[in-house]
Image 1 (tube, rainbow, N blue to C red):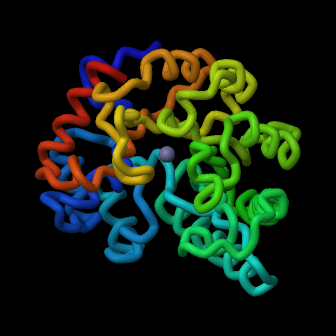
Image 2: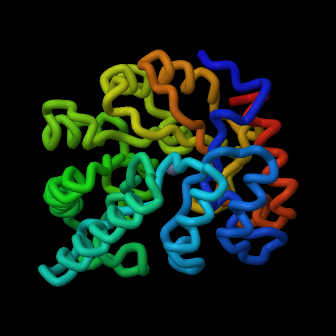
Length: 292
Ligand code: ZN
């Protein structure tokens, strides 16, 4: 296993982690500058943050500082109630691929969506099997476009508590079944993002990481699961503050040959987003070196 204790070579910051500083929105250029000042070499930005600052501006900043991306957040949200909705998702996902290519991201992370309307508080139906078939069809179609752009797609299985509103792909096994169906040749065009927050509880995790193998392991996300947890979305813990044995999972991933970034992704309305972002980043570095 790689030694993270001495530097930040393999630390990436998912920019949601410091999207707020002292409760106030922090623009993406400021986030990038703060990372650069600390020697952090990689980020994984969110599309809304990129759009707010301008794609050309961010692309230029990333290149000027020689930064890399560990992913681009995010594509997906495939299910819809009608043809127009499916087409809107398809078009938006193609734009995500184009943006990721401009930013030289290694992959577009897919949060695949759940029951249409559920995220807005009113699910249009209860047919999760239909949603899953639309996800499969949507990824298949997106994959054709992604291959032309040479942009890999990383399916991120989300914890089952999000099955209704954010992602009806909920285990690594389920994500890998999709990979095997849509990319049986293991070409590298389709893989998974393993986020310890979503997957740590899974009794099949070690076996499925081995099944994924190097070709399918495209991203590795870390934070921690707090007990008790107070919010299902925005109460993620700093590494070391919760119950996830992160080094064990990283060991499984690296045993397959994964040698990419360890991406810190923390959504924390009540705690880290209330602190100065400098403190949050410094803590990310310290914990990356000691408990990841
Ligand atoms: Zn993640």
